[in-house]
Length: 93
Image (cartoon, rainbow, N blue to C red; front, side, top):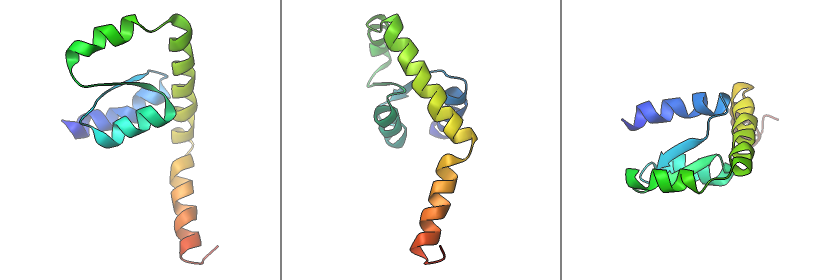
């Protein structure tokens, strides 16, 4: 199940859709928190409260961050960064 959810992570970001991440999905929750692109929850019962406390302005800001991060994913920003770091570590660049 985690693989299925993780595979949709990038798709949601590219679409500008904020992420609802279960707290036991450690890597995904670290990204959601770092980039402020959604909410982390411990139980499904928390979701209604999280969403009702969200203002329209906060939602729009979150969507903008999702879109920005999604564009970086689409353009290969993180892949390029990883490759360049690896090449530097090998002394190639």
